Amino acid sequence: MFDIGFSELLVIAVVALVVLGPERLPKAARFAGLWVRRARTQWDSVKQELERELHADEIKRQFRDVQASVQDTEAQLRASGEAVRREAEQMRQDVARHGDDVAAAADEPVMTGPAPGSPASVAQHVVAADAVEVDEPVRDAMAPPGIDGTAPRAAAPVEPAPVGAPHPDTAQNAPLPRDEQAPR
Figure 1: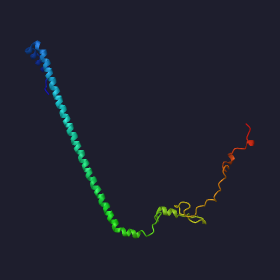
Figure 2: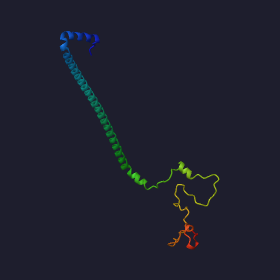
Figure 3: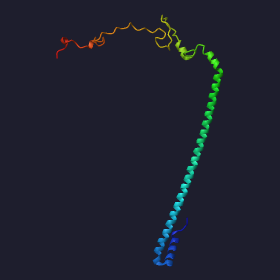
Figure 4: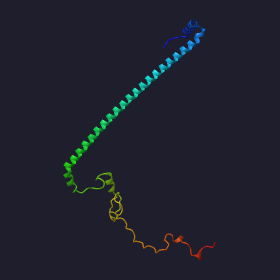
């Protein structure tokens, strides 16, 4: 602000002492200090107000930037949604045009299982070079047991045990009659 050194302040103090005298100088110094304090306080409040305004302007600018980016994103989403709708409508029209072709193709048999020549198909039909002829029919490796009729059938059904009879697996752990029990 002002470039006032110690020597200038000393000259001002001597002039004030000569002009005002020793009786009025302390009151004048207090009065000058009060005005300097008020000026500093006013300057600080103006500075704080400017900083708040600048900060508010920066926040408003950032808000406008975010709002613009949100609007751009919304426009992009609407455009992509419209493109998806047009593509879906095009597919519907294609299906409607080719629906008769699909209905005619539905009468043809549908192949299930791996595609011919694929690794899964080849793996099912690989036979070892020293394979021994077996009388069992060849089963599809992907079929669960029992579907093709080659799975072993269960033995004849077991008759249920009479009520109160011990289970055959637990017969060895059954309690002994009283006369065969070990002495205590």
